[in-house]
Amino acid sequence: MSPAGCSHVNGYKVDNWRQNLRVIYQCFVWSGTAETRRRKIGNIFVSTDRREDRSAVRKRDTEKEEKRERTEEERHMSEAQQENHQAKSCICHMCGAHLNRLHSCLYCVFFGCFTKKHIHEHAKNKRHNLAIDLLYGGIYCFVCQDYIYDKDMEQIAKEEQRKAWKLQGIGEKYTTWEPTKRELELFRHNPKRRKITTNCTIGLRGLINLGNTCFMNCIVQALTHTPLLRDFFLSDRHKCEMQSNSCLVCEMSQLFQEFYSGHRSPHIPFRLLHLVWTHARHLAGYEQQDAHEFLIAALDVLHRHCKGDTIKDDNGKKTNNPNHCNCIIDQIFTGGLQSDVTCQVCHGVSTTIDPFWDISLDLPGSPTPFWPLSPGGDGSTVNGENHLSGSTTLTDCLRRFTRPEHLGSNAKIKCGGCHSYQESTKQLTMKKLPIVACFHLKRFEHSAKLRRKITTYVSFPLELDMTPFMASSKESRVNGQYQQSVDVLNNDNKYSLFAVVNHQGTLESGHYTSFIRQHKDQWFKCDDAIITKASIKDVLDSEGYLLFYHKQFLEYE
Image (cartoon, rainbow, N blue to C red; front, top):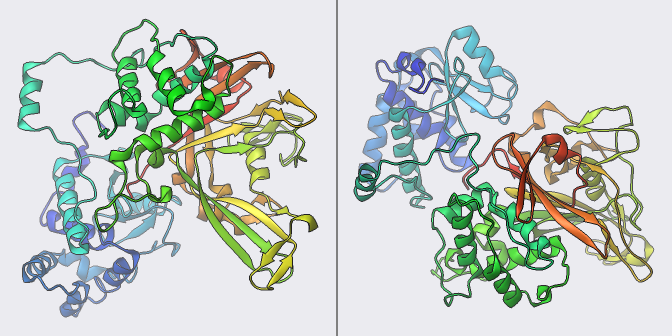
């Protein structure tokens, strides 16, 4: 698409295109719940002869003005569409599926899968170049091969979305930022702009080691290069309700300002260290600490200090349930881990879902038996990982983490169906994926007999698909192996690597460093105050202790 925008939109903007687009947004995109959508789409294009059937799509509403507006908009529906097509249900017209990123043609009544490229085939055969994503409302151009922006279409989408929210009685969920008159005036009086180019080093800044604080420095580098966390702090979104100089969130906000100020001299994080010592006493002192332990402690303190950003109940009171917190930490890092315990006698299943900030994965060489799940040592590629002979991959560790585990006779549970203690199996899967997935490779073994570091090399990919490890994918497993099907491909479960924390040395004497991604394919190694450019090979060949992945596709909830 050219900088001026998509030129193919002009061919669509004829006759009653505005009303046609509004109807699509009303009936198929912003139609509220799935049940509401089914009611609307079941009647909107049913008959070419009975015009009165269109009234079935109108929801009963006590407000006459809103009903009049909907009636007026439906009256302007494209007559050509009504005379030539019947859309009895919102499913792909070629395969009958209702998933796979369904898109609707903007020129005629046709629904097609984007994943299976059925909408692509329709666009090619009919030369209908524009289609709309029925989940997110984006307009896709098949000539430009990209989602496009058009000011007029965007305005219609926003208006219809607000109407849908109003009909559902939920108000506005979120609003996009638009500059005020005051801000526009400031822009005009301050024309100087800082351009972000591919060679830009803004955001890269070393951190002074204050005495065995490399464990803190590497985690700070990972957090300051987490895209959504960066956007939150640089937009000054935190509302502090604590005493001055005691809030870790305020200090992190100041830290982000320091990192993205453009200064190149190393930063001295003494205030951050002092606050961590104050709020996480077990990390106080100048002894070497565990980077993973610091990460969890930092997230916990940040979560507790984000009081002004937590969700409120129906009575306007703040909820104390951490599962219902919507602070920025939980929005980015919290996922849901599903645990299914199955009775071996009656096969009854007891399910619990617990929140998590990270996933700790066992490695070969640990006391627990490891299941070699790699599909052979033939150099094949699974999930973007290279399977060399005898090597272990991140996918192997995740398969082991989500495999069924027999609990044995010494760990019987009381079955609700049998009303007695029975042997059972337990299986962990991902119920809800976080925006940032952090994987902790358990390299440090602490037991009564032994304290050591496990140096097993684990191959990890630049891009990771978590679909095989979802609770919804359990039925697709055969003997522990995920049977991939086109029907279950979901881009919402795909992640990109953006930070890696490494540990060099032994358990008694070691040093932490990190790799961070500055731009799409630009990586840098952070060794306390020293920042050096790194290659992708340097990143993927590193040992790996903490792996940070970011979702490739985000959606509003």
